Length: 317
Image (cartoon, rainbow, N blue to C red; front, side, top):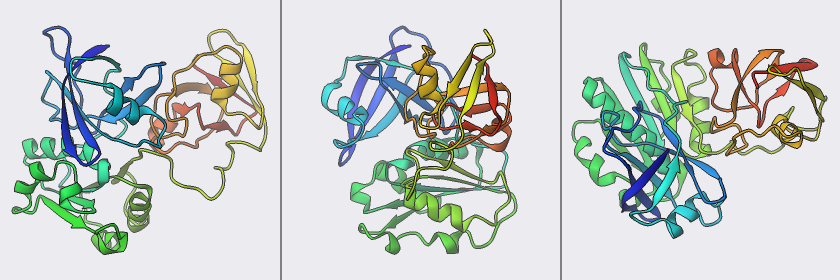
């Protein structure tokens, strides 16, 4: 759908907030805390940005974008070429980082621009009068997005800033924070790979389903993920026609499908955004993504990174 850029606001050094409004006087599709939208850039490239305004708002979407000149082009295109009044194509909201309501307590951990989906969660939890705290890791409050808006919540303990001055060891002690598993607590974390890894390690003894992550990029690896390339070949069957497409060891499922004329939407191509999520009907996937939960993996896979443990896998295509 198309929306208009109503305003562009300087949020923090290198970060702009884009206010997107409908072209006609009607509400935008609803969303829940943790959701994101795809923004379609010139050339058809899609990039995902979290919505951070309160979910009750239907008259606008707010997204904040960190300018990464050396990135994959999405933030650079928005920062350099987009101005107030422009019309952008976006997707409807999707949510792979859903806030589970009704928990006894919530611990939110953010690092840098990873704070954006958690801002919407803070707003929703305040509406629910739920017990929650946001631990915000940053270099300094002066460089942190939304610091002025969050400052009033510091006094009552709802927000805790952890300023490390650029030295991660001087910031939040996640091992201490999560040393004890508090019954009924849900944890949500979004930020740089180092912070995410530290929280994963610190919460490894917590029950399944209580700790949730949102990745903006795939974790840094010393070697390619096993199964992405260099291992056994398999076949993909299209459920609608019965057509069978071979997937050689040097190609991803997405690459093989496209090479045979099957066009699928994708964006990150690293298993972190959910754009290429596809239902499978038969076979045993080798999941390589970073966002699907155990229940979702029983029905879906990400064709950009997933392979197959079975000789053939049938996709709902």
